[in-house]
Length: 108
Picture 1: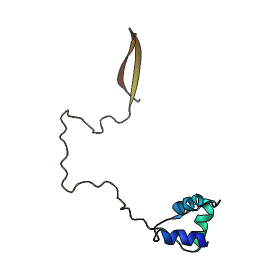
Picture 2 (picture 1 turned 180 degrees about the vertical axis):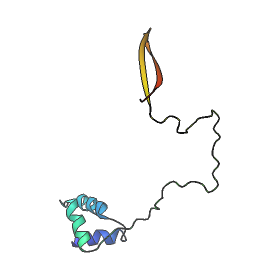
Picture 3 (picture 1 turned 90 degrees about the horizontal axis):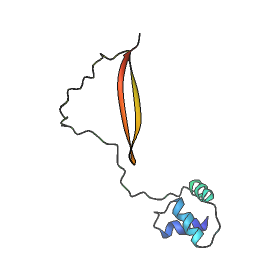
Picture 4 (picture 1 turned 90 degrees about the vertical axis):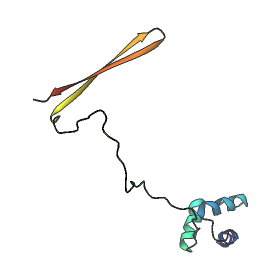
């Protein structure tokens, strides 16, 4: 425990369990990382995180949305409609060409 305190004090209190474990290993001490974590937790020794934590992406207050240039219809006129897809792979010389089609079928 004394060696953990020495390494922690030598880092001016910034090192956490992973760095202290690495420092002890470099010094030739065969110690388990989980034991270092447990001892540090028991004696309330913790490193300092100086990194700024970023939050989730937030929408701009005055966001401008793009216009619907192709006139998509997201209405409820496709309720109870099943879409099916069919694809075909055709060899053309050294390459392949894939063709596909989609059609809808009303559920009865």
